[in-house]
Amino acid sequence: MRMNTTLVINSKGGSGKTTIATNLASYFAANGIPAALMDYDPQGSSLNWLQVRGQVGEKIYGANAAPQKGGRIRSVEMFIPANTQQLILDAPAGASGLLLQEILRRPDCIVVPVAPSAIDIHATAHFIRELLLVGKIRARSVRLAVVANRVRSSMPVYQPLERFLNSLGVPFLTRICDSDAYLTAAETGLGIFEMGESAATERQEFLPIAEWVAQRKPAPQDGNIIELTRPRWSPRSRPQPQFAAGPQSVSGQP
Ligand SMILES: Nc1ncnc2c1ncn2[C@@H]1O[C@H](COP(=O)(O)OP(=O)(O)O)[C@@H](O)[C@H]1O
Ligand SMILES: [Mg+2]
Image 1: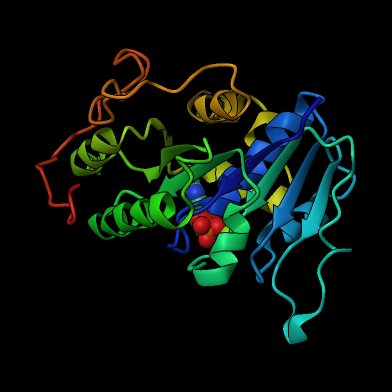
Image 2: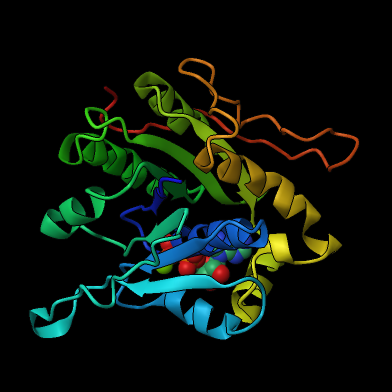
């Protein structure tokens, strides 16, 4: 079976790249699908998580793709086992120029996590434009989707981003809540799909990413992006978020 490669990227640090990359890899591993994580970040957070993981959970192969000092060749560190079916690339913050071009050569699909602040949304809109231009990902049929991460119920600043993505036909997959489960997962080398009932809500929110990556479910189509300003869960099962959103400007509308 052909390997599917997924890049998790945003120019902003702290947007949740490593969190999404590690949980995605552990989702596949937990489902018996040979998975590997390739870490392009010199901070090596994904590889650290794999080290903590050790013998816990299903094996996930780790590869180091971070630029080496002195231009050392990375080919050995970048080895991926031939039976890998899902390869997840964890990008560094601020990748640009040649490194960005190199990273963008590999993926079949790209997931962009964005934190719900006006500054992050603004920066992400610019970054997506760069991906489309520099990466020419449309011409290469690379699939691209955005995920809202660290959403708090009082923080619904999504309308401008939704409009921006809608105009580009880029789907918005899901909103991931700000949750201690992700901190526990990071500390223990596990993923939310390998944790108990305490992470059930997180799994439900995360699943659309895994399904989109595995292409089991297509993303919402152009012009039919899920409305993130409304809760996707039943108001009876979850508290009703307090939305204060007013349109905020995302510059550079297409
Ligand atoms: N949904 C979330 N809920 C709680 N903490 C999160 C969430 N997403 C990320 N974090 C935490 O925020 C910090 C930055 O996330 P990280 O995934 O490392 O971002 P990036 O790789 O983009 O720099 C980490 O400490 C991580 O555990
Ligand atoms: Mg990271």
